[in-house]
Length: 335
Image (cartoon, rainbow, N blue to C red):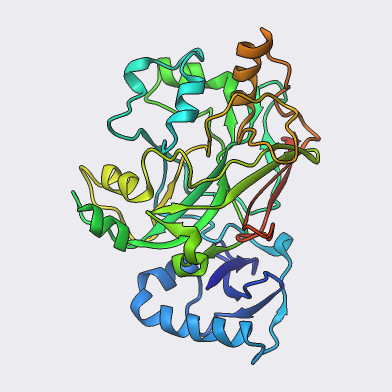
């Protein structure tokens, strides 16, 4: 089933069930007021939500038109947002960046950072920045939402705790990365609000595209309608989602509703932009620039600037959007 959160004037929004083709929704307000509440009472809520989902997909109830621009992040404010580094290809490409140190880029255990989770943004909310010259970058990722996870879980327990799956844009201000890593406790100012696709889905909704704790779908990224990348999230993922959960819970429990990101989706290749229609490309600009330095001696792909538009979505083998699209304009903070 697919779940979303619509605006209702309250911080946590209104939980709805979305049809498989993302065209219609039915209210879940009588089952749970919001997605966090449904997760907290999952054993009771999930079967009821699923029954409504089946009715919607079987056209037994009409539903109402689903408009992604009316959606908030599926969990607009989460108790915890943790981003991992599942793709060593991405880390290898950014090792030489100022502020990144080899000791911090491990391949035995996944890297993690704890992001701001008090104001996660929706699929069409703008990327608001205080200045336009901060080397603004998108990062296309997959994310999972967990049930409660005990400290030091087994990989089997971590796998069983995965409740929902979605996509996100973990925006980075590259010009601030070095200061954060060298002078602080890790990422802070370099990581503004993370944006999420309009729907989260249960693992069974993905069928064979969810296996080995990985999402085997292309994650397609456009900037101003130009295709930047479409790597497959199931390929070259060194640490799967169970690995990321196990590492996150190594010294603490994880509360119900914890969101864990995959890290920037990346596949191994030697392309540079622009890519052909069947190319792989990149899920962030800094990787494209790094490859350009290697191939042509200097970066040429610009970072985002105010007025640019980013679109991110995961598509199945037929090109159909699975989680809906993130589509955001870069905007300067109004003063």
